[in-house]
Length: 111
Image 1 (cartoon, rainbow, N blue to C red):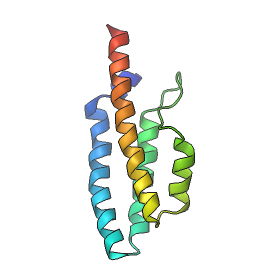
Image 2: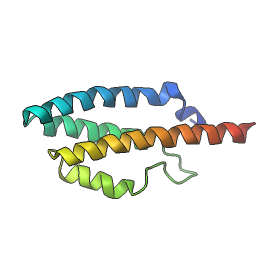
Image 3: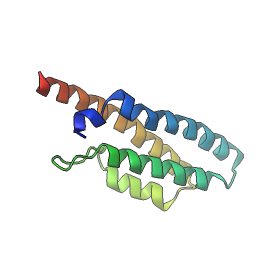
């Protein structure tokens, strides 16, 4: 599948909708200081990695936020930490912007 087909709203929105649901749950778990937060964060990390994989194309450098690898490593190393949750939330937010920008770029190239 071409990158332009992978980056359509129909293809990428499910990742972000799923994250929004998880983020609300994780936020509530943090407020209650519930140990279940680690399990939910692991699921969020896996979702983010799937998003990165989905948006990759062997012909170009992978789509990823600035310092994305280091930031993801921090999240993976401390999934129960509130700062890690905020970082993962920011990574999703930045990916959404990057994908939108890439969509525009690909559309201009096709014209």
